[in-house]
Amino acid sequence: MSKVDDREIEQFLEKVFDENYEHLHAETGRGITPAMRQLAWEHVRAYWRRMKAVAEKVTETEVRLSLPSQISPTGRQYTIEGVVDVVREGDETIIYDLKTHNPDIVMINKEAYAGQLNVYAHIWQKLRGSTPDDIAIIATEPPAEVRKALQENDKDALEQEMANWDPVVRLNFDQNAVDKCVTHFGQVVDNIENGRFVPPAPEVLGKKKPGQKAPFGTAVCRHCDARFSCRSYEKYMASKGRKKTDVIVSDGSELEAEREDFLETMVDAETGV
Ligand code: SF4
Image 1 (cartoon, protein in one colour):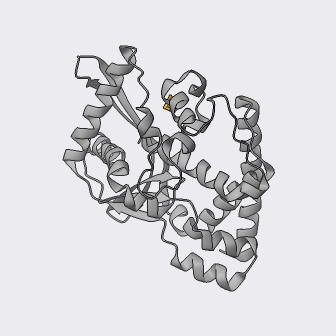
Image 2 (cartoon, rainbow, N blue to C red):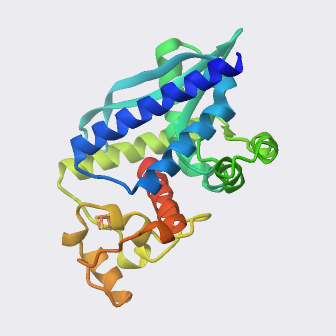
Image 3 (cartoon, rainbow, N blue to C red):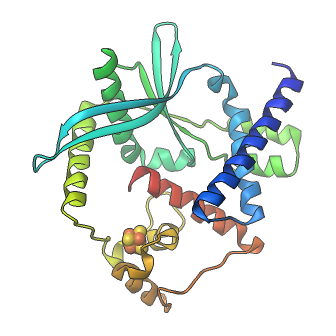
């Protein structure tokens, strides 16, 4: 592909990125600072540059996988659904799940990610009659070195750091992980249907997951719409000498902390851990 084509594609991606942001902003009423928006765009652009070879090989994108007639532990019927990207090369089929996370965090928390992707592979197997040859997470967050080179427009450093960055984390298909994950889904269905919504204990809010810099109470709860009525969050904030209604505002000088919080929130929200 020529350089002109690449530039045109990036212009198109930036246009779509802006349109998406405006749509989400209008729909949810939530906004982010211009600096955060710029970081998010750099995230998308770096990911595209690093992964375009794979992206161009994707044979089926956003494939909706659905497994109906599952039975929860108390006998409720439910359906499991997921969306994946599929690459077919010759006879080989690879299922990818995209996460806006750092590859190192995915590696450290491999088990948490493996369950969901194994379930997708299991559904694929049931629907298509063959086991995928490989399953992998594509962790799209560019490393700090790549972002720095992009911001400084340092072409040599960018080339070097792009080559060092491996966003693909391969996982092994494991039937035990499928069974465990499906059982967990069933338990969640029962809890929802029974109206059992119990937040984690306040001590959990003070803990960090492996590889994360902020504890759950900061990384996740700060963005939770239910926090003002949540007893655990109230106690967590009290342990820090704050009220649950206190608002933590980040400006440009706190950009890195805000960015980390944002990404860690996505880790927890998407893995359900
Ligand atoms: S504030 Fe929200 S995310 Fe945090 S523990 Fe309470 S309900 Fe869960």
